[in-house]
Image 1 (tube, rainbow, N blue to C red):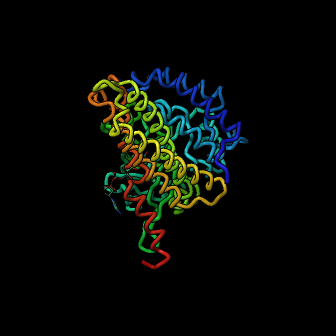
Image 2: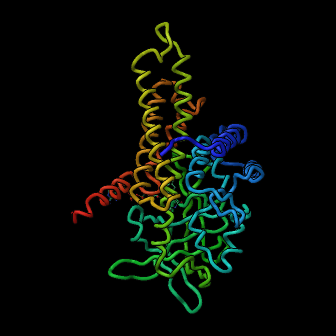
Image 3: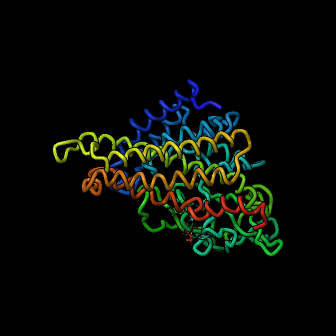
Length: 382
Ligand SMILES: Cc1cc2nc3c(=O)[nH]c(=O)nc-3n(C[C@H](O)[C@H](O)[C@H](O)COP(=O)(O)OP(=O)(O)OC[C@H]3O[C@@H](n4cnc5c(N)ncnc54)[C@H](O)[C@@H]3O)c2cc1C
């Protein structure tokens, strides 16, 4: 076991860090104030990311992607995580579920998404089916050569800028449980309406939508993977989205720690730097320790994924710990900044707000704890 990055990995980190600082940071205030990433800025970021080979890095090189494994992708995402979500998500890491594309789906969805000509989003959650995703009501009924879809999804990130949705819908029942299938549905399909969802406290400029399917007819070729095996397909790739939350949390936490350290070293009260007061210095110590621990858990899970040995528990522990560490880190940072921490002249209040969603999306902290505890107790038949 060794803990050092190779020179190529170090170069990747430095390249992405430079990109984030020069191409993303300058737009953060605008995105925050307007809750929008202007189309020309989005296009510029995508073009520059493609030129640097930073686009679709998680996709196989033989298909035009960056061909990075999970560890290297996680390393890159840690750096991207330092920047505003709305901006850093312009550098697409297409959903790994798209690797299940077959036949005409490859030309129609997978390759254009890797090239950045089309954009995907993923829809599982419904108003009455959140953590209990299998209870979804959206149903795709077979009708001759087609499927007819009815139902409503909500909280679907990025759907306002996506060209198509990877949709999870119930297609039947087996053993008293709904069976789920995945479909690729273009947003211009008749019977599909998308509406911007309510404004979210976290990640301004990165929106979520409601999707309404009313007798929305898609051909059988829209089925992604096998019929009734969508849950298994999603399960295969959900781990990587949880690692994405974990590693972006670590990256953002590191940026916050750097800013808090700088403030603690320069802000003076009672004639000395506030960092000299143990109440402030110990906060910094806790922040540093928690972020290092979160990073190690995340890196270990990512490394295991590359070996084909990552378990649901590994991904759940990384997501749980990193997202909760980020909450404590941003809260401590705000305390160190005092009143200025709450003012929107500085980005600290934004980091604090942005941290909140990380404990909710991609499976709440409670669901991650459920996954971890079940893995402990199930072998004991408890
Ligand atoms: C900004 C944002 C973007 C999102 N983007 C997407 C997206 O792109 N695609 C998508 O499909 N979904 C997306 N989601 C949905 C997200 O994954 C869900 O919000 C999340 O899984 C929780 O579901 P819920 O909000 O319905 O909460 P609920 O499931 O109603 O949970 C409410 C509370 O009950 C607790 N709870 C529920 N069940 C249990 C249990 N068994 N044990 C213990 N506690 C439990 C939860 O932990 C939580 O505290 C997004 C959500 C947000 C907020």
